[in-house]
Image 1: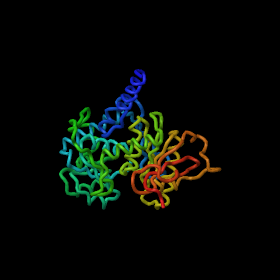
Image 2: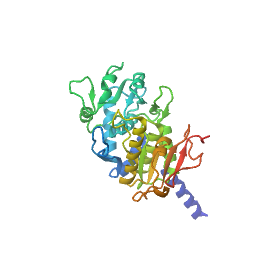
Image 3: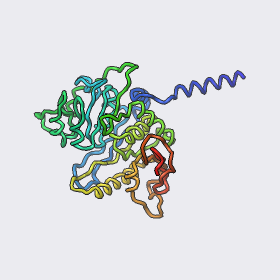
Image 4: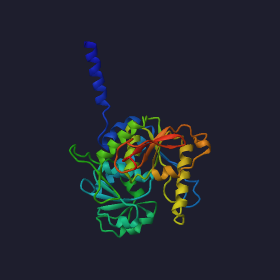
Length: 340
């Protein structure tokens, strides 16, 4: 009986130590054990015919966390914190990953916008945008100039991303009080909020459902400005120290039709799955349906590592209510209400 009691206590102690994190700051603290592991990959965009060619980015957890802390320190210096809101209009990028995580460390809320018109409706302290939207963001009513990624003249009335990151290099934001409610993420909505805790919880659920491990490479083919991309994608990888791989989703040329962009995006996703040997993928229903089906409906040579994924099929955050969706015989667990 004594042996059984000791074993029971040991199991309970192990379970307690492995309890899922509740906050992004907790994940950051735990991931220091993985700081040399690859955290995020943005493959080079040479395969795109139009637009700027962006170099490949590969950051370890240590490099990514350090950048997120620097950004958070900069936000706090500019007056961001609990009760303040950062408006964001950006496609998936290394800077967006830093900003989404850094905002949680600073304690401020985030509201994302899909279009320039949507951005103008955001009630925020200031904005984070790509250089193409700097002029629009600069005309908004706020308490500081927009933080701009991707260039611009030094004389422009903007906060240059690179200048900001260099100015606060090596700094960290002050710790938030333990009873602080956490950041809120308003994904393309001024009123509907996904709390930091719910996003972290969704990540934990996704990691468990997919049996994700630190050795997985997770293709996140969904915008990070959406619960599916940030919660079920990035936060899932962070729960186990896996690598999140981000294919290019931004339209490579404004002249492309929606159909042409869909084909280009699908090719980016397929190429990323193949080149990066991804073992899991997170995709919405549009991306999954647009992926090509290869001969005999099976995975092509070189993509055998892919064993599963998640796909959004309806409202809500429930996992597995519907039958898995298949792509080349690979099962994608459903997220959301059971489709009608």
